Image 1 (cartoon, one colour):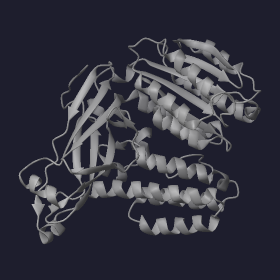
Image 2 (cartoon, helix red, strand yellow; image 1 turned 90 degrees about the vertical axis):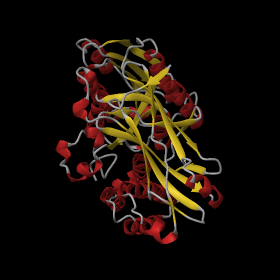
Image 3 (cartoon, helix red, strand yellow; image 1 turned 180 degrees about the horizontal axis):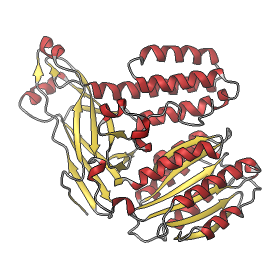
Image 4 (tube, helix red, strand yellow; image 1 turned 30 degrees about the vertical axis):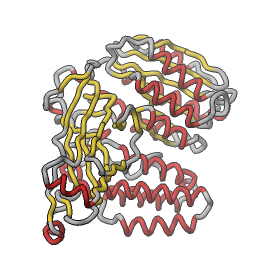
Amino acid sequence: MSSSAPQSVARVVITPLRAALAAQQVNVIDVLVRVQAPDMDAAPVGAIHAQRALALVIDSSGSMQGRPLEEAKRCALTVVKRLRPNDHLAVVQFDQDVRLLWPATEVRDGLAASEAIHRIRSGGSTALHAGWLQGAQALATCPESMGLKRVILLSDGEANQGERDPEVIAKACAEWASQGITTSTYGLGESFNEELMVTMASRGGGNQYYGQTADDLMAPFEEELSFIDMRCLASLQLSCRVMPGVKLDVLNDLAAEGGGYRLADLAFGAESWALLRLTVPAWALESVRHGNPLMHATLEALDMAGQGVRLEAEPLNLPVLEQDAWLASPVSDLVQRRVTEVAAAQAMDTMRAALRRGDTAAVQELLSAAKREFGDSPWVQSILNSMERLAADQDGIRFLAKEMLYSSTTLRSKIRSVQEEKLQAADDAEVPAFLRRNGLQGSKRP
């Protein structure tokens, strides 16, 4: 059951691109809805010490033989070392069969779990769905008081044994996420199915990463664990109600859930967000003039004690101005930046489609066009520069399609800093790992 939450927990803010509507015409206005956490300094004492429950699900199929499996085991051992004695951990190995090597129990000194990881050997096909499901089921046995329950899946390949339908697998991830067990995916090497891995994480309420080696995945593991430590709200569901006649479109591809939209979990110092487009017919402007709000936004979430939280934004009320006054009204730099980032993500989807068709000339053309179009965004430019380097590198080009998908997903869904302007000028060392804006989402080698 949800209850009202004080502003000290979080707040919901609605910001339009332009804070006015133009008279006597259809208005199309972009609106940013942000769920903002308090600053990191406001985290209550003990917040970062909530118990965590993780399930490490490790692909040991034949394609993992040799170095890939050793890299995956190194990653898993790193996670074990980062956990606290009272955290819970399960270890699952899968090829064509699934084995629960270590049940979801307290880590303690980590030696037993580490030994289970060391014993993993490769062979067989890839029952990815069954392996992931075993991890989720293992976490279901953990106490309800756990601050986090997350499956961490490491794989280098395709689901080719058992359930293979990406939509069925993604739907299962979403269903478990609704029960409080989320999924993050780590793709290793160059042969894994990036569409499946990204979709599982997106629908499963977690994060998606990839790299060529364990070293490439060390930074993402640190990023994820630091984010987990600083979480303040989970299971965020945003509901938006617009004035009759107004059309609402979601621009950053949020998953629909229970009559609303699923947002990323929230950490102290960060904000989760939705970018919406409202189309307001001319006949509705009279109602706006009479003070009727264009939109209401409500957030339902769970705090780290598992208690329901309900947050209401101030309704969106905008004046209706004549054309000259409307054109003179200010435009929000913040909202424009998010619009640019989402548009860049859409451009990357187009590039990826051309790349998968084998049309490399079109990819180069689209890259050049994107650099011109999105020149005002340093972050987008750094991503496009990374793609250019990958495209020019004989080894890197094998990862280009993956990089395009991971970058477009990041631009649409990554949580942002509440103090975004300050973050742009800050040195990376001063910024928490989960808020850094990387130009390259995967391997750091090219």
